[in-house]
Length: 337
Image 1 (cartoon, helix red, strand yellow):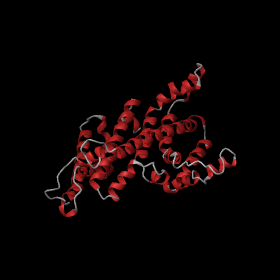
Image 2: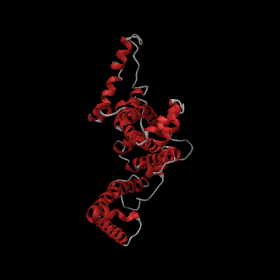
Image 3: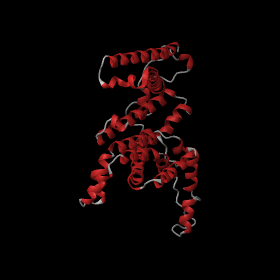
Image 4: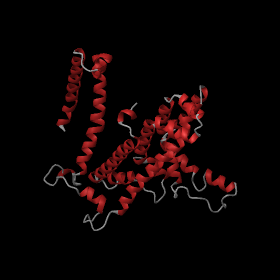
């Protein structure tokens, strides 16, 4: 633990040295990329480097490294931690694949199916959000003008003033067997009064709640990308006789690829890592992988195994992000614009 107190001084010295290096390179007439210090000044540049370095190192890198190291440890009581039994092992990852036996004769189908279902469901939520948000983003960016676009933004933002957990419980009430949806269907004569649909068990409420929870994460990147498209290109394609679907396929979507990739990445990461919404809206058989991780940590008190499960989920999300970037042929610089 004493070594952790050396991190902050090391970061301070590294940041100050980097600022001096950038300033010296700028004064020597180096490349334009070193104009960061010249544009912002030594004080602001130092603050920005320290803030970003502190956030990335202490809030992202070190916790993840600690989790990775913990995932290769045995689940030992505190007195034995750091002793001769505290060695690295693959048992936690072996448990995810093969269960308690760990012999390879049979797989841990329960956790593997939950993991696969979570990834597939997160992909489905991402696709559903894209289908819902693309028309909205296009309308706000290219069609609605002035006060109408601002009103639409306000309508999108106001529901998110309510806490996520309260919104999830609202969806549970709406999709319950005696909720608003079933009451409307029974009132219209579509369903018999004694046979309501169990939307919770069918995961309809879960997908609706997750899609709604992260809709802004898809709308805003799409809006930012589509809004920068010159409307004259759309008019030119329309004048040449292109149908509406070809205009979107050949003009709008290629231009909006960074926004599409950014929105898909954020929605997938949040959906795959969701915990509160699946716990509230999930049915008896719709266990989310994050709930398994939570149970390993706080029900079974097996932090190494929970760390291994969390690391597997993290790697899967990173693979999805890299695959999405490769599919859309964009890089991190395009997404960060």
